[in-house]
Image (cartoon, rainbow, N blue to C red; front, side, top):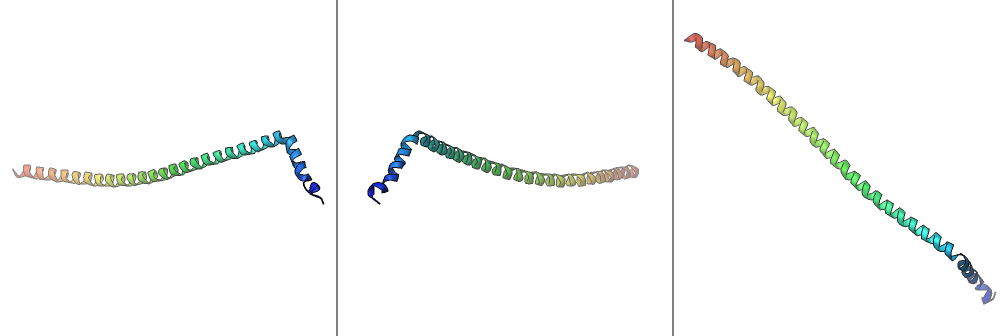
Length: 105
């Protein structure tokens, strides 16, 4: 083989590029734009995923806080009920003491 026949493929390639350069450039720009668009969508989805994850963690924490508050309220209600019972007992004791005192006079 001669040097001329070895370089023939190079000449053929450049002739191909010369005829189809516009289509090659358009396809290349389309692929580049598509890859940038996909990268942008991926970044935005990652940000949304992070925000959703943070939001879910906050919801879980607020549910726990709410459950603790309800438990505290139950404890306070029980204590108030006990105090009501003690107040009614003291009222009864005061009534009996009052009636005994009246009878004693």
